[in-house]
Length: 387
Image (cartoon, rainbow, N blue to C red; front, side):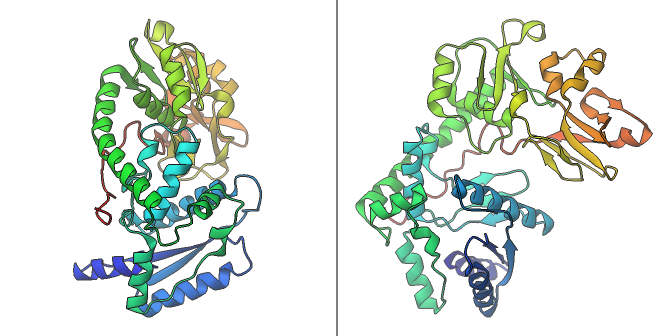
C-alpha cells in the first residue's frame, strides 16, 4: 500500500499515472474480502486497481515457491495485456535481509548474496524495487501520516514457511535492528561488486560461448568462469534462477560430461572439436502445451503469431529421427527442438524449416529464455536509508 501511495504521488508530479494490481491467492477464506477492501482504499486515493485471482494453489510442500511463480505469472500477463513496461514491487529492507539469509542457507553464490536486485529485466517488462533500502517502520509511518489504512496478511506469521521462521527469529518488525541493517548493507555492497562482475561475465560469454537460436550453446575449451557458466545454464534451461553455486564450481573444477541444472553438458564432437555442447536436458523438458500467440514452452521458446486452433507446442523428441537429413545438428539437440503438432501429427518444426503444409509455413517460434545469460548490471536498492 505504501508503494502504491508513493508511486502515485511520484507519477502525478510528472504527469504520469499508476495502476495497482492486487493478487488474491485464494489460500484463506478472508482473502477475497481483504482484496476488495484494498481495492476500495486504493480507489478512494485515486489509484485505479485490479484484483488478480489465482486458482489451483493448495497447501503443501513448496507452497511459497508455487505461490510466487503463480503470482509473477499473473502479474506479467496483466502487464503484457495492459502494455505496461514497468512493474514496481514493494519489497523493503526486512524482506531483503530475509532473502540474504535464505540464500546463505541455500548455498547461493556471490550474486545470490546480493539479495534482490533493484531492477530485473524480464521477457516483457522490467521489475523495479524502489523500497529495498527502507525499513518497514518507515513505510507504516508514511501511511499513518497520509491517513491510509492497510491489511496485515496473517500468512506472514505462519511458521510453516522458512522465510517466516527466519522473520520470527530475527524479531525485528520495524526492520531497523542491527542484523537487518547489516544484511542490507552487505547485500548492497555485494550488488556493487556484482555490477562489475556482470560486465566481466558478459565479456567471457561473448568470447567463449556461442548461443544458438535452436536453444543450445557451444563453449570453447579452457578455464570456466563458474558464474558466467551458471548464467548460461539458466538461459539454456529456461529457468528463472541459476544453478546452485557449489554444483557449478564443482563441475568447472573438473569439466566432464554431466547433467546439471536442467542441462546436459557433453563434448561438442564434430560440431566444434574440443568444445563443450550445452543443451536442454531432454528428460526435464516441459510437456506439450496449447499453442497460441505469445505462449511460452519450457521457459525457452515463444510462439510469435497466430497458429491454427488445436495446435500444441512441445519437444520434437523421437520425431527428430525422421528429420535428421534437414540439419547437421547432433541428434541430442534435435530432440530438444520445439515442434508444433495438430491432432497428434507433426505440423511444423520452424528451426528445421519443416512444414506439413502451406498453412504451417507461417509458424514462428523464437528462442526467448525467461532471463538472459548475463544480467543488467544495475546497482539500485542500496543503503541510502541506513547510511
